[in-house]
Image (cartoon, rainbow, N blue to C red):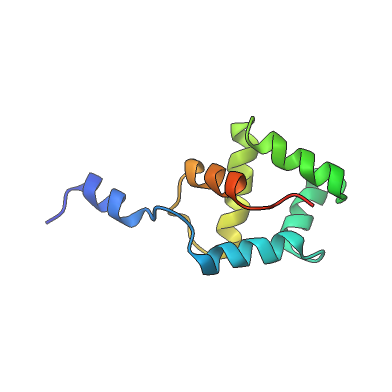
Length: 97
């Protein structure tokens, strides 16, 4: 029988799969996607300068980062990833317009 720490560590993926990254990126740039709906709820303009600023702010604000992680969770359909993985995704993917 596994101990709980081992079970948690094994159930947490190390990074998003290529398929998951594709889903996130597709939704991020889809004008009818969940990302734009989220921005509108936060009263953020959906133009390139404001979206770029949003992504810059994510890396400095853990609450915003957690909100973006929740968005990612809704898009890919899983919750077993960390905020560090979300930060890595933001830093390594071309999210800015």
